Length: 81
Image (cartoon, rainbow, N blue to C red):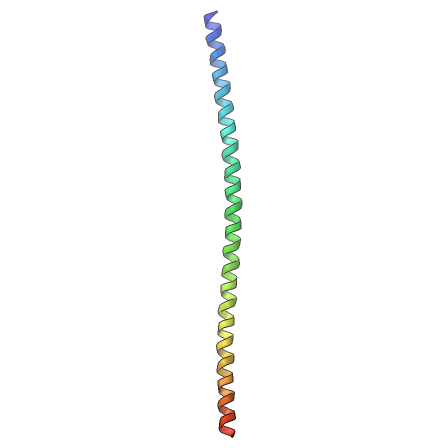
């Protein structure tokens, strides 16, 4: 009888342990998936910011060219007057 109760206790302990391991594993996988989603969103944001910075650099260069052209035109007008 004592052996049977010890065997049942062992089986119960093993089931509880494996159940806890499976539950912890599922929770860890869920957390990893959520972190992966956050990282993907962050990476998309970084890509968008990089593209915006590239556009801003092009726009700044365009402004410099336009201002230089305006200055040249103003100089031509002054020379004609």
